[in-house]
Amino acid sequence: MQTLNRLIALCIAIAISGVLVSCTARVHSKPGTETTIILTRHAERTIITKILTDRGRARAKELVKTVGDMKITAIYSPDLVRNLDTVRPLAKHLGIDITVVSSKPEVDEIVETMLTRHAGEIVLWVGNTANLSGIYYALGGEGEAPDNFGDLFILKIKDQGFPEVIKKKY
Image 1 (cartoon, rainbow, N blue to C red):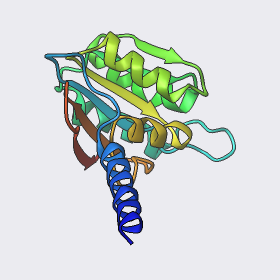
Image 2: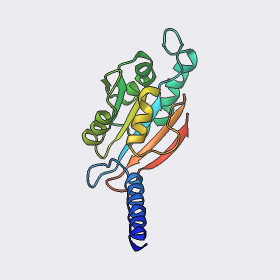
Image 3: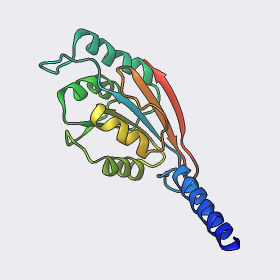
């Protein structure tokens, strides 16, 4: 009986340690910094041509009003017309170039690049449903990812602990 109790206790300890490990944030900003990553989906597009609709172009202008004064230092976008057209007005407003990546970016690579190259800065990623969820969860986000048009999730990635997540719409 004592052996069975020890076995049960061991199983419980292993289970608890597994839960604790899965609850820790996976990534952090460089020591002494807090990096802010803003995630948003490209604006509305046509189904066939995949270019921005009138509503999408209006939303791209609204993005400038929403985040234009947040001191963004870098903008990343997959090499897709709808994503680039969403963020071009913001890049023009800020006077910065868009860092264009593969249309099918590697999530871990993008996360690492944004956190190391831009430690302590504010970075915007304009993505699509194929990559937003992966980036959001890799940064420690929980719950629903920013997959809807107008979602704007701001993740403050600290050098330790959990990220602060602010979920907005624009």
